Length: 480
Ligand code: GDG
Image (cartoon, rainbow, N blue to C red; front, side, top):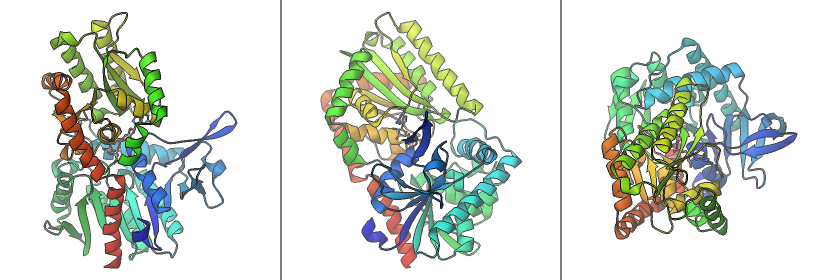
C-alpha cells in the first residue's frame, strides 16, 4: 500500500470514528466501536499511515485532540492521524439518527421496515455533509491526496469536495446493499443523492449485483449514460467508475489469534461459566439490528428443537447481540423480540440444568469473540439483507482448526463468495430449521472440506487485498 501511495496522503472519511475517547470516572479511556466498517478500515489506515476524518462522538474526545482537532491513534502505538469533526446534538439527531439511519439504511436494505422521510433530517444531512467537506479540504490542503469516503452517511460529500478541488481523486465505498431502483425511487431526494454519489471518480460496492442496481437506478432516475462494459456512468459530462470490491477481514491476524494461549484460556473460562462441556455450541454475533435476522434465527432454532427432539439438552445457542441505535423505535422492537423469543424457547424446552439460548448483550473483547468462534460447532449469519457481513468471514478466519459449519443467509453479500457455507433463506423458518439439523449432522470430512475451501477464499482476499485494489484503482485514475 505504501509503495503504491508514494507521497500521496491517503485520507479516509466516515461518520463513525475508529477510536472513541470517553470518561471512566475521572480517567480517560479509549474504546473501539462495534462496527464492521471501522473493524475493516483500521488495519488499512495503520498500514497506509494516513488520516481519518470522522465525527468526534466520545465524551472525552475534545480532551485528547490538539488545536487542529487531531489525535494520533492508536494511543499506545500511534500509527495514523484521526481528525475529529464536531457535531451538535441537533446535527447528530437529524443527520445520523434521522436521515442516515431512518432513511438511507431502511431504503438500501430490504428488511420491510419503511424509511421515515423528514424534511428537517434531510436539511441536517446536507449541512453535516458540508461540514465534513470543509474538514476534508482543510486536511488535504495543497497536498496530493487520494480520498476514500465511506458509506451512506456521506452521500453528498464527494461532489462537494470535487466542486472545490476538481483534480483531487475521490472514491467512495458503500458498505450496505444498493436496492433495486423501484425501491430507491421512493426517496423524495433521490436525484440529489444520486448526483452526490456521481461526484465520485470511483464508487465501490460489495457485489456485482449492487453495482448493477446502482447503475440501473442512475439510468432510470437521472437518465445518466451507462456503459455496462466499461462499468461506468456519465452524468453532466463526468464519468464515475462503478465496481465491486468485496470487503474482507484481516485473515492472518484472526487465524493466528485463534490459536493463542489467551484465547485457549478464554475458551476454558466460557465453557466453565456457561456450562458448555459436552454441548454442541452454536453462535450468532450481531449488532441488534432488524436487518440481521436474529428473530428469524431464534424462530428456526425453536422449530429445530421442536422437530429434532434428539438435540434437546445437547445444543446451546449463544447469541452475542450488542444493542445498537437504541433511540430508534424499530431497533427497540427487535431488541424486545429477541429477548421474548429467547425466553420463550428457554421456558418451553429448557430445564434446570440446560438453557438452549444464551443472550450476551454486553460488548465482547476480541479475545472473547475469538474464543466463541472457536467453541462453536456452527455459526449462524441469517441477515435479511446485508452488504457483506464480516461475522461470516471472521468465523472462517478464526477456524484455523478447519472445523465448524457456517450457516449463511443467501441475502448477505458474503454468500456470493462463501459458497461452501450451508446457505439459507432466513424467511423460510421450516427450511432453516432443517439446515440447522444438516449442519449438526454433517460428517467431519465434509465439514473440513467446506471449511478449508472457505478459508482459502478469505485468505486469498483479505482486507489488505480489498484496500489495495481500491487504492490501485484510485491511483490509476490519479495518474490517467
Ligand atoms: C456494515 C454492513 C458490512 C458484533 N457484535 C460484537 C462485535 N461485533 C463485530 C463483529 C463484526 C462487526 O461488529 C459487525 O460487522 P458486520 O459486517 O456484520 O455488520 P455492520 O456493522 O452492519 O457493517 C456490513 C460492513 O459494514 C463492512 O463493510 O460487512 O454488511 O452492514 O466485526 O465481529 N464486536 C464486539 N462485541 C460485540 O458484541 N467487540
